[in-house]
Image 1 (cartoon, rainbow, N blue to C red):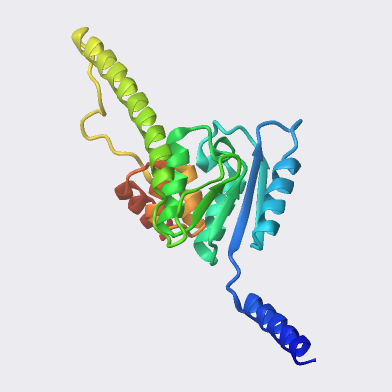
Image 2: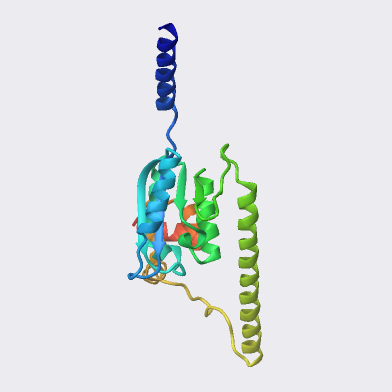
Length: 230
């Protein structure tokens, strides 16, 4: 009799401990490229994984848009970043890397933005997390992202080299590169040219986060924010 009571007591204590355990709050993000495709399979697999890990899924974000589009053109992804910056979230679950972005530079920027907020990205297909349990960057993830960064750096170098070659050829023919002397953009031109940045600022994202997403200089973003405050 005493043994049975003791077993029941232990079970109750274990349940209480489990309830007191801090639930890991996660967001799920899914994307497909065309309207004819369906992201439900991604959502189902990520929901199943979250259930197995006993995570608390606080929000789901999904969209049908090309992964080659820039971050500022991805409404659901922007909503995800906005939500994470305003609410306590521990992880973002995605099915595979290209779901976040097919543009290496944007993929890395989003990862960096989330890492700065101590939010880990779990990539289901690879079983990879960008942060370790203690909140530090995952060395394996760093290696993978480092390879992507190298490819991106090479791509940028090639583009810069081609542009410089084109400029030099244009100059050799007597052409001039750059703005005309005394030229300055009007506020209307600035607001029109940087519509995506203005939208992100209005959403309440910090200038550093907007800079990480759009790669627009912080000085330019400060000018835009000042214009918006008039």
